[in-house]
Every structure is written in structure tokens, then in C-alpha cells.
Image (tube, rainbow, N blue to C red; front, top):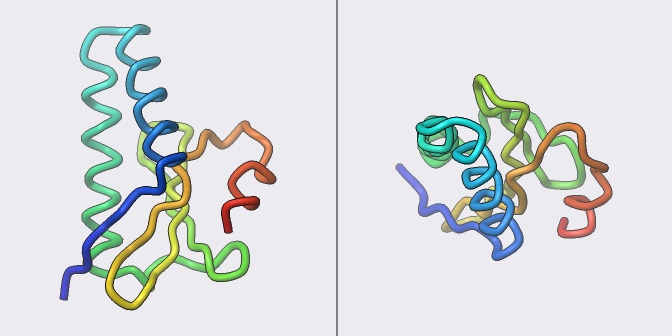
Length: 98
């Protein structure tokens, strides 16, 4: 059964900022980033336990072709995305949301 997905406001800001940045680098690249993140979100809503826990009850999945990960928590009724995170940043940023 597919679960609903919800992004924390901070995760939404990160996602939008990354999309804008990629689009400024090259036309269409932001659209490709969005497509890859949506594909990841689709996978985790159908099988949220597929990926390993990396911190407390937070799971991580890589975004193909981009240096980003989606960090999420599998709740009873939804998948809660706590971060769309660039892999070069300090992990304490997203850990503070866990």
C-alpha cells in the first residue's frame, strides 16, 4: 500500500533551493533534479522500509545522478521527509530535525 509523502518545511526549502540552483547552472537541469527526487519519493512511498536506518529512525536514499540524499522517517500513515540534503554539507543540520 502506498503511503502519503510529506516534506517538512525545511526539506521543502532545501528541495526548492537545489532545484533553482541546478536550473541556473543549465536550463533543464533543475527539471531533471525534480524528476530524480520524485522517482525516489515514489519508491519510498511504496516500500519505505527498503532503505537502512542511518540515525535513530531516519532512513536515507541516494538521489541518482545528483550529490543529494533524501532522509525520511516512516510513520504509520505517511513518509515524512526531513531533508533533501546535499552530501557535502554537515550532517548535524539534518540530524537536529530527527
